[in-house]
Image (cartoon, rainbow, N blue to C red; front, side, top):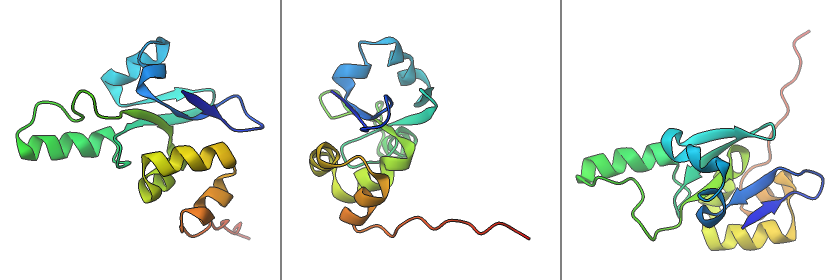
Length: 120
């Protein structure tokens, strides 16, 4: 499954079933990838990126950062805090309703982004 924003062809989320059987599968070697002008990172079902999962696995003595059968999604970086805040299932439900980043942040209880003032 790949979910796109209404005004963009760049998906917000791609499930492993989608990205693992495409040319995006090279991401498994690097943990993140640039695609359609956006950066995507592999996350587990809790929204932890693959690098954090690797550290946890190493501390626990596990060989794999994300165990087989566990969700392993490719998420646009700016949406990862929302994914982490609400969890995988709720995130997937919310992005079907709206793809607006600020609206999703609000629904997830995350403070809106502030625009930096230009230096004069």
